[in-house]
Amino acid sequence: MVLAAAFFAAALVGACAREPEESPPEPALTDVEIGIKVDKIIADYLESLDLDSRETIFKAQDSVSQGTVTLRGDTSDESLKKGLLDMVAQIPGITVVDELRVLPPPSMGEKVFGVVKVPVVNLGDGPRSSGGSHTVTQARMGDILKLLKENDGWFLGQMDDGYLGWVGPESVHLVSREEVEAMKKSRVALVTAKTASVLREPGGDSLFIQALVQGSVLPLVGEEGDWVQVRVPGGPEGWIEASKTQAYESMDAVFGERKGAEGVIDTAKQYLGLPYLWGGTTAYGFDCSGLTQFAMKMNGYSIRRDADMQYEQGEVVADRADLRPGDLVFFETYRKGPSHVGIYIGDSQYIQSGGQTGITILSFDPAHSNYSETLDRAYLGGRRIIK
Image (cartoon, rainbow, N blue to C red; front, side, top):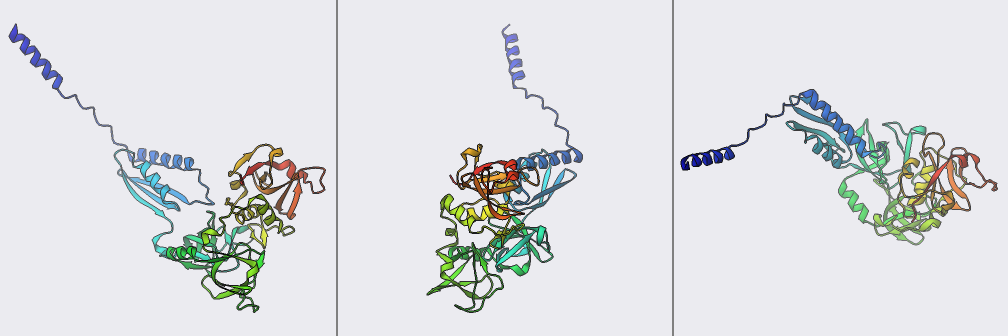
């Protein structure tokens, strides 16, 4: 009995020590199955990001061969590329080849920034396409664009508000990142008047046919009596009346002071009567969102470029009775969703730039002579940027 018990115990120990049988490996995915998975990952990733092509470039496509996934495309944001690569790499048993290009490409060299060197330039919706309805926005002399692509000599530039548009080579002075950083740390002059001419010498001839516009920022060389000396990007030095400018110790300080609703409204009111300009953002003409963005920026508030973009910002003002001066008011006009915007100024009135009226003050109140029934009916809601 003792011998039998010992044998049974030994057998039990042996049974417990036996390694479990390995489950059969999962069958390898076919190239078609891998392709379907990668396509879904790309589609789901793009949907989750909810990117706006007016501000961000991200195009990705895939090909699969013998378990190797090659990802190709362009993006203006390196973090988007990393996110996609990480997700695709989770598919078991595949090899990922990264051919996603972060813009600008190395072929563009070190000078991948363009400083606007003309008083005002139209940015277009494509290379050699920047006039009239092809204008997507405008830039002023001194604005710094990040250059992402080059096509037929033209550059796809990204402005400081993130907005994208094409600009011709004759309108920008190419500089490196190091030169941009040096510019930002140097003293600058902000044009505070609606327009200001740059002269060859105090009281002399103008350097340009057009005057500079309010909001232009240029390197400040020196000051002499009633004049300031500035440097034109990539060009000569010139003189501007000091009373039309304000000096700052660095570029980052220029739009840093928040001046409240009164400042925003006063800035917009300067341009009452100015005709509407599609894509306009300057004293030569504004579209509706160009006016609101400009008035906000000059007073220390940063908002996006287009009306539907601005509608996504700030605090929702659900009831029109709760509107305060400085709030943005939105309307549904020529297309679905927010397509027109103005600035509420109080007493049921708002200032706006309209295609037929130019920059005017209109009212929600039928008792007012400037009441607009059309926009009253088209009203969508308000957004509070100034807290």
